Length: 190
Image (cartoon, rainbow, N blue to C red):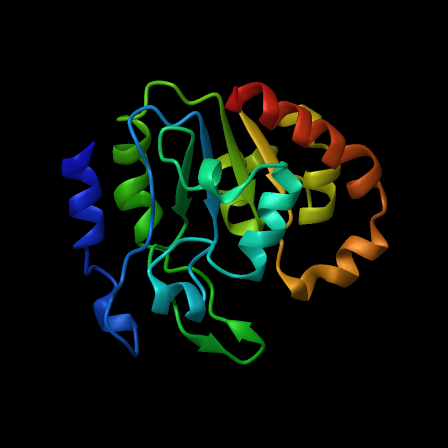
């Protein structure tokens, strides 16, 4: 596992597409039980070098019902983005994750993890990549139908503060989905 992690951390395949130096950010271990596949690091995470070290990460940990010490324990949780480097700013937020990363590295990483119980797919990029034709017509429908993807996958919206309107518009997320999600996480973490 360490060899693959080092290869990813030294990866520069997207260098020519970035306005800054590549800084691949991830955390994973051979014994990881929960794999979180997000989008790509934001500028704050790019600067700190710590995955999910921002407001989105704080909310995600709340959704999961776990503290930072468990979240950042690679024997418990692997943090693997679709794009390992901060993609830069776009017109309405960050650019999409670079498309080179997942095909190059995800299978190599996942093949090294023997104890994975579930893969959490955060946002449309990971959901389209992993669920393919099983993904619904949009993120809302995919997340609403989360039970169809169990026991392998659990789709979630991105926990970004930008998604507060989505969360208000979809009250079932807090009343139905989150209790099931937290229960599942507690079973896999123990």
